[in-house]
Image 1 (cartoon, rainbow, N blue to C red):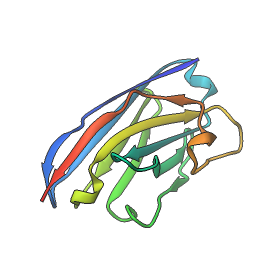
Image 2: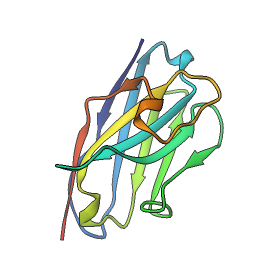
Image 3: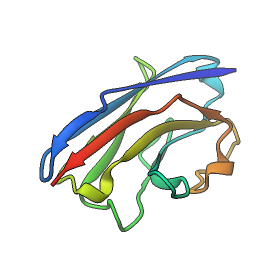
Image 4: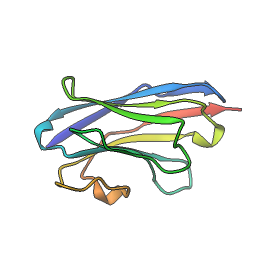
Length: 125
């Protein structure tokens, strides 16, 4: 099993920045891919960023590409999401996710079998 704990959410003005962190523990050696998703009230969970746990591959949807950056620290077993130029529509609960499925860096929530509890990000206009 892998446990994930997010931190770093909060309230920020539009145009500002936030950095989210996700601490992984347990069987971290089984992780192949990590990702961030978000879910706003009344909306489906949305893919935000993904990366191979050990490697340089990263993936983003057009809505955040160029503004968000996912990074890993394999020594500290953490995953970060740097969010710049935030917009009110970025407001959501952000979730860290991990997958032990080899060879797959998915963009769908069902591609990931481990989840954190979520952290709220609110962007005011």
